[in-house]
Image 1 (cartoon, rainbow, N blue to C red):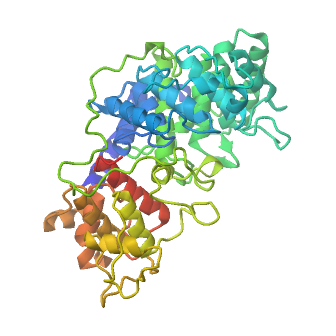
Image 2 (tube, rainbow, N blue to C red; image 1 turned 60 degrees about the vertical axis):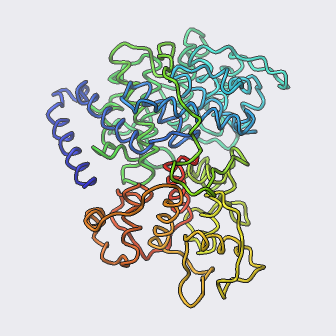
Image 3 (cartoon, rainbow, N blue to C red; image 1 turned 90 degrees about the vertical axis):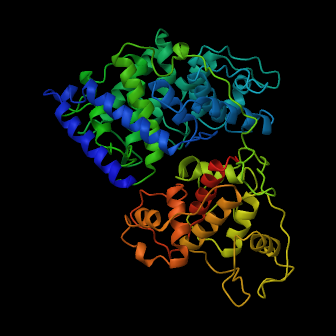
Length: 553
């Protein structure tokens, strides 16, 4: 079974790591251990991100880490990603976001890592917005930091932006970062506003990464030294950092990348605490076969942490081998191979004729309670569906990812996902023609996705359970041309790993098993919880994964 295989692999890696440890604490993470950990993390990321799309999770950071580590990926992995970027850019008319210009910087970095020129993507120059100084710095320190990192990744010239009120230059971005340095020597996301009290190791690491190429400037050199003193004082006894009061892997990763970009060894005495380097601390978050944890107590998105850990480990390996640093991408090999994207987004060969891909309608659509400081584990799925009008927020403009979903809401979600035209009928006694969900219920029933709850009732306001959602997803997958049927032994093998599988209804067993096999449900979770209400975020992830595998995104 998949879980047992992963645990066995993880144990093997763990034993090898123990045998690989050097006597000296400062070199505890040997080259061999680093290589094993990097390869294992790359495999985990590649398995979780089978089809990278434009997005911060499951997108550019995964591509960056895989490409800069030189990890093995499927033959057309990067070609498929580039085709997805082209489609996204075309659909939004070259405007990735009207306020968050880090969207451009992130995509530029990923494209540069795979050897593509970000100045010509489906006919659009993605570096052009970064020529607008005011708009780039609007979102705070993140704007100038990542603009500088992106532009420097392949020495792109700062583009002349005729729409800019203030034309940007590299020096302007450097100066902006310097003027945002706090009195304690570090930087924070707020960018030096009056609300700042102390610096944050994450943002300090990112600022140092951006400034690394400009150390010959006296003001930059002084700012870097002051920041390094601050960082050294902020390290804990494990060699790592806490951000917002929580010890986490990402803070350590950003500082590791910063030291590598600056050309400073990780075992520099300033950054060794109780014999522990930053890399030693990062390794305490490593779960062999399962990527990296976000926090020491195991909370947070392991995928987000693992994607960042992957490029952090790549930075360390490149430094040890004397190669170009993570963000100096002049050595990136050109992307080769032709991608036949005529089939992309057109669905599988056996799909129902009425099923069609839903086009982008609101590129960049997001919600404050899943993005920014409230980044959610299912952010990429939610945003991808919201951008297509498949899923919406609530009346207050927020998404409320942890809320439950009604049967009517889930039926609407599925019908929209398939691009079907809602058509009401009178088959359910509790669905009136004027109800907002009438057409969705009628269409979902007509295509065999729902069957009601008996006695000609649909129960539209009832909360949909995880097993009900799984069965509806399996029927949806069949309409998409996928094969949801499994034999009895396959169902048993898939579900026997969960101690609560016996509480799953007989009529739901095959649907639930299919969802685990197709990874619409996460096998890493310890329980099925078939009778629990499905959360809005879980429903979004389920449908997003299904549409991706069905070639409808």
